[in-house]
Length: 426
Image (cartoon, rainbow, N blue to C red; front, side, top):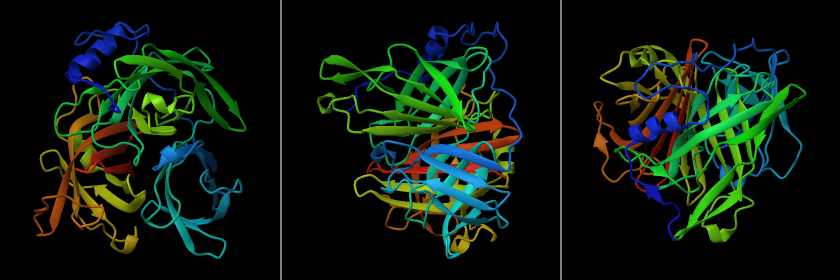
């Protein structure tokens, strides 16, 4: 039985049709001028000394609930809860903030026990352990807020979830009422894993119509809960099931979605009990790659082996150099020391930006050193410095808010194993 059934259509046609047929009041035609004010998120508030985030780990199919991460800069401490640990007690400790942007997490004995990268009040990347730990992506939404118009979010499914010929990335629109208590989601579409060609949309599961959500807030944390009716293909017939969904969205547009498929029976052919998606809001104008590459970024590269549940998460730095065509260079830090100059051994080639989705590059490439292990490919090619390199098809999304860029990129090797690069501008 096929896990997914695909419709092979041109992505530009799909997204143009979605704009025209959307449930919002926007009257924007494809190629025409907008008759309404541009869609926008609210002004981003000033971050406090204490910020809490909700999100998911790269191996999210095994998790029924989200991670919770708190950074307290007034006391230089941290805490996080791991839903896979079997304990409700949080992991706590002190943190240090050396040069390089990363937070070093210390255990109760003062030894390094993890790393984090925070945009205070917006989002955080957490590696809860050594390089074998899967990456956590988490977002802060402290209140229920209203947005103007119909805002588009671009997302990738969390690493370790998808594989060859399965849904990999997508987009969804959201609008709210005047106080942000009621949300409406529409035109959610997923696309298959990148393979160097124009991607097709995946109909399994599908959303035949828009759906509503309700925002609730308490103790400085908010989220939007919804229960869309999704349809699943099992042979020639389609069946529908309710899929409880939670969204956490920051005012700057960082996006986290978590869905439970507990209501979907095994006979529907769906293999995952829970999934999550990581993303950013669409920039208000096309992205200029020269300005992206000129900035300095740090982040993590997570390599997920789906079959063996083996993960490798390395801290990396990118940018701060001229583009070569549409290629941005970067790489790992020596001995995982972010205070040292980065070793340039990786690159991201963005390719052409989708004309109907600002910041979406669905024909991107990720090149990383070949090591015969998780960074593996059938035909490694020597790079300019002579080292063997593997290049993978990828999709990249570039967000821009508060004068800072954020990049979320997913790539797949021939075995269907996912490699996810997340970068925050410094």
